[in-house]
Image (cartoon, rainbow, N blue to C red; front, side):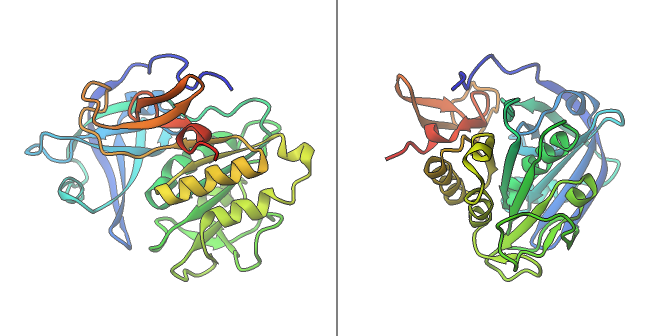
Length: 295
């Protein structure tokens, strides 16, 4: 496997951005769109930005980038109103200014040999998956499929799925409307009984899709996942069982987000032995077998 830390991260821009839209969804979820041209021009799927939630709060908060419009100069983020910082951020109004550092971290890298990228997102881990799906939709010879899970109402419009996904349970009837527009098949999962969603865990859908693939097809598949730790471990174990490469984008509390404070380190198992790596700049994307080594 290629070196997961091939080079230092690129330039991190610091810019004062304008709030273009701030939309609230059920479950204390919000979608924030900023005029952030420097971040939008440089961002890639799996990266994040560090936002100043309020002028009176010195510590920033890291948010995954969900979509960008490089030509128009906007960047979009999904987050939940949970702690002190995000509650302050949720008060910001259209037209206000928010300081942003970004983009930060190593992104997802989809190998040219991968024909079947399987994208798995859970909760606030959905944004990088949406970003990756939008990038892959126009790549020749690539057939991405996305599986999205949530225990609260999905923070996007859903609709009956128009694209078939082989192997998945018939109860998974709905898809992300954005991905439908892009021609990317998707299915939804939830333990909360959400309409049109498979009643269970989202890695189950990925397994149902991958297991029936012929060996030649499976050799050209890879898993890309973002979400809570139990979900990430389940995806990593699925990849190990089926012999499919796995790439995980980790979420971690962090202070500086530029590698200086060492507050976001995680233990990984590298070929030379165990090591501590910083999620912000050594990641956030890591090989699955390094985060969850096989037993």
